[in-house]
Image (cartoon, rainbow, N blue to C red; front, side, top):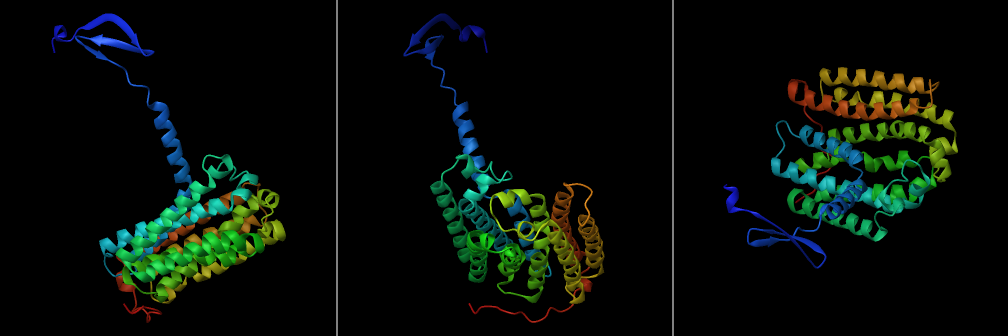
Length: 343
């Protein structure tokens, strides 16, 4: 465009404390800088996102999705799978937010959690409560309307089991809190299975059992590393009440049990030799870490066990999924389902 068509007037005037530049015959007033407001909104969004414990929820949703795929011979129905995924994710996020709310006193004391939104004052308890209720309500609405009532009931039970029964009571009452409360955390593959089939099936219960047995060695490894934190917060985790050495032996015992349990999908005909090989290899790795934990080379080794346990579970379920589609001939007829509601 010809510069002559748009000439800037050199004269500058000030109106109401703002600089006004005249361009041609029109005056333009620069808008106030919106960056601070955008930064504030972005910061608030990050705080709400942190309430959902995204890394924990990602693992939960991953196992739920695998449960959906394992529930049917081919591909699960898209609408139910997508709605189930969203509903389960929202419920897990709601439970995580309630956990933040109930544990805010503990979180202020522990170094690992002192940066969370409530201890830092970034969000108020009322904001967190409204957020949690909103997510939970959306979850139940989606599951009831677009999936099936059974999945909604099981998901709600899991939410209450973790957010209320475990967080508010078991966590503060017994050193076996993670064992008893692990049932809520083990539910996702069962929820995923129910979302696409509308039934509770023995194979889904096997997936539940695997995560249930996996949970204690996974979490106790973290508790060993954070034993001083839990002691300062007066949370009766096993290494606080019975000592680190006692807990290390329990990690090994549950790891051995876990390796045995992970063979069950092959023994029952749910999966084939591809899965079996992967499960045994992963189990050997977990056993190595559990044995080494009895006499660890350094204080950080417990976190290595914790991190491996996450990789272990994700890889184990990945082996189940690959085996399900690549080696369908290994699948045997499923046993009779345990429960299917009349609709």
